[in-house]
Length: 141
Image (cartoon, rainbow, N blue to C red; front, side, top):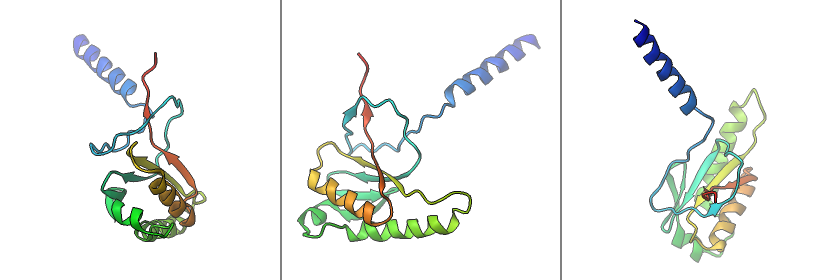
């Protein structure tokens, strides 16, 4: 009986140690994140993933990268439409706290700045002005 209690104690301790407040963004093999020395932990927000071919909002394709880069418009219509729907839903259902409008852009480190700028402008025009960029933490030392 005592050895069984020891096993359960070790199991509980293991579970407590491994259930920290670290947020893990969904990994996508087609996106290679840039490295950073940032020490702050990410908050849970909407995620816009950008690879060489597609722009995805919460895993749903909203636009093609080539179409966005070839467009003269500074706003991505498909992304704006989806963000406005989510903003409207967030404003209607957030009775406890105010709508914040946070979004995290998880973009490949090779995407052109022109594309990143259009994504950020679209977010800002869709009431998602609090924009974070996902990076991979550089190894210390």
